[in-house]
Length: 456
Image 1: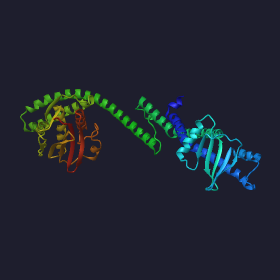
Image 2: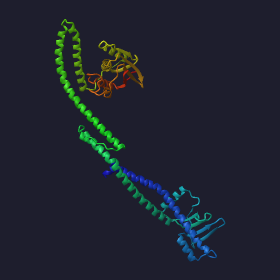
Image 3: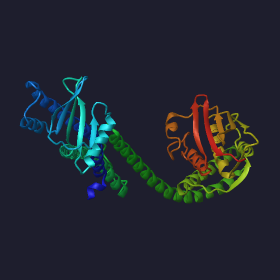
């Protein structure tokens, strides 16, 4: 059946099995208690039958009355044991031979269970002698002789009633569990599953997103988390589309701008030949502005076209690379700028030198353009990896940039920036099985931590 393949159907079967198992564990002591009560009842009936003897002068009754007393007591014989003597009070003329004796005075609980199970498993009829204390007079022990077959028949009837009740309870309980699960768990899970399937078919369609309920349990948390995940995926897909559009636009702009700037460079070269102090002062800035414009378009195009840089790995000392980066970062606008290289000479890395150069150069330029006068680069070994901190004494990152630091076109740390520098730096480091994180930022400066695999 199909419904048995689902979670509710499986739990329905398990509930029935567990209830039946619990009833079985209850049945064992119950059937032993039933057998003990049955035998105690025969002892009590036997003692009541002997009371008729006390009404006679010679402690004797007629054979007919004796047989009737034994018939109603459902025994073959009754004996009374006192501290002084044992008296066979009532007995059939020819009682059958005793096959087994049970003493209820000394039997322990595990023995009762074993005797009860043994009685149920037998198919023959044994004659039992049962000894037990009188319920009203604990000082008197009563012995009765009786057949085992009637007791076994009563025990089977009792077990049948227990089985029927167990089946009814298990079905009722399993039904409650099944419908409760359908309402509390299965239906909400199906709703979540349907939403996931519909969202997969068209992630950009907002109507296919799940509408979370107000439930405070795990299902409610799952619905809200799924809704948030779907929202973030839609945002990412829209951003991807925008990036594709930007890539196409920048590609065209880059082509046209290069042609335009080529003409401007030719004109600038002519201007550089003019022997005019003012022209000579302005021309370098003009060259620099045009170079920046070309580089800006190129970086944006490269990021949109391929966010996974191709690695050309080599083994080198990180300190030498950091020193080379410092040589490309002179003071800016007459402000002092120091590149403090404290990287240990012993640390070697296997990486793409040009790509790592871009990472440190980007961090250095950002710090210099933000107004920092000093950038300190330090290194240490942490958990078998190389940890490099790049700390500056600039004014710190603004809150807006800090919140979206590693988002393309959104995390620019300076006016006019693209917001791609740190994004590209993170992509480069992750391609090297490393990462970059913002350690701290504030009025006293900003610190980034770079994590890289360490070469022996």
